Image 1 (tube, rainbow, N blue to C red):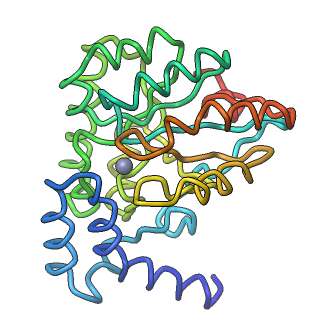
Image 2 (image 1 turned 180 degrees about the vertical axis):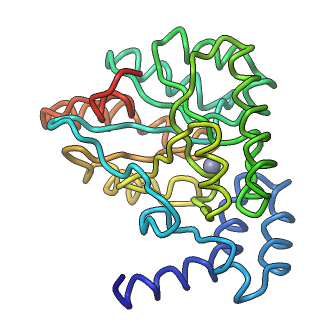
Amino acid sequence: MRVAEWASLLLGGLSFGGSIGGYSGLLPGELGLGLSLGGAAGLGGMVALGSARPDLQIFGPSVQRGRVPGRLVLSIDDGPHPVSTPLFLQALAEAGVRATFFVLVDRALACPDLLWAMLAGGHEIGLHGLTHSARITWKNPQDGANELRRALRLLSQYGTPPVRWYRPPFGAVSPRMYQALQIVGLEMVWCSVRTGDGVAIPVERLRRRAEGAGDRDIVLLHDGTGPAPKLLPSLLQGWAARGLQVGTVSEGLGVLP
Ligand SMILES: [Zn+2]
């Protein structure tokens, strides 16, 4: 591993608590969690526990790009959300394409009609967590696996087909988390275009980042109160005009869903 990568890991670990606090801007209830995590973990502790850099693949593998030429994977985290999910679903239906929604189970249970609308639209469901928490990174692997099993069981009870893909909240990963994923048979999916729409971002910057996505990229957008849902119709038009086929993680990897 290059020195620069170790430096990135260190910075990733050190910024982990901060990024949780930042992302929690969308979720006021979690701000306290982010701050307490950052404070409790201390400077060295986060490096031992994990990192907010799944792209470095230090603790285990992660899918970061598609494999099928001409395809662009669209992934949407943090839903369902009563305002944004219907807008995303409408834009996707009008364009005739599918996406992968990495859902939070507590939110899916709060509005199961939106989970069912995702399924009815033919979209793929991935797991983002039982709740939007990084606690699985430090739970012992069996406890982590039990949490994941519970999340998967609840999704199944609400009609979701078997789930294969997992995306970690805040991008937080650790050796313990990878062991838990292995126990339940989930595979880590990260992204190659992180648009930054989960935090306050000017719409034009988001547009530039998303429009820059290309062949085999995995684009990350967020359900919630950000600008992405309103921007999606024009993004889909732009990608189609460039000959890119938008689809799910499974479509982008060329595997059966
Ligand atoms: Zn998230």
